[in-house]
Image 1 (tube, one colour):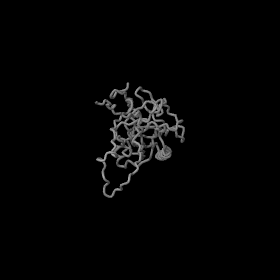
Image 2 (image 1 turned 90 degrees about the horizontal axis):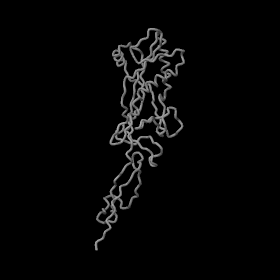
Image 3 (image 1 turned 135 degrees about the vertical axis):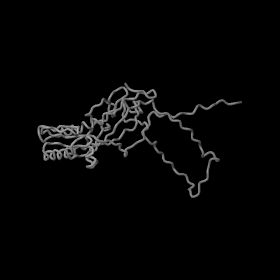
Image 4 (image 1 turned 90 degrees about the vertical axis):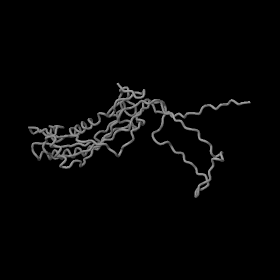
Length: 278
């Protein structure tokens, strides 16, 4: 059931599951590319886990997340990039949301095998496999409407494999190898988890979290005062300042900043009083 804000329905959070989905996609990407043997490695999040047999293990552990300040925006509501039925100017449904939250997820990746040489071979395969993950996630952006429907940016029912529209908003999660932990930091992390020290890799995944959609209240109303004609009023004319040319300068028409407005109505003045006294 959706919430209500100022009399308008508010949808659930659209991006609350993105962090968990990135971890699952990272594990799935490694398993889908396994081509060394018939038995794939085991994916493990418990750093202290040590298998008793010759089972090979790949540890994937998200140890830190941080806000990406390079793409920070103000928190005011703005128009969400999702349209239903038609464009806003043609009467389509319009929704607003706060700017998305840009996050960097940091993962600790390690390997384990009974023999050191097999562990190093597995570590090299992990490096080459993750080097191919230019986009760990590449799918249409999902939006949840106040009535619970899941749609893409074009208002169609959400489908992960949709790729047939040029203006379809896509969700992309990049993955990069970074040098984020020192040996001392890793040693302290292993000690906290009571895990043995192993060679490790650190990766950074950049994600975008979208919040709730807010249904539009029916457009925007702007009140603009009437501009006075100062050219016909000699008292309002001012002589040119020192060093300023006396000629007239052509003004340039500039567009309004920000996103394209929808349903903008100008408030007109009241009808003038036409009664005349004798």
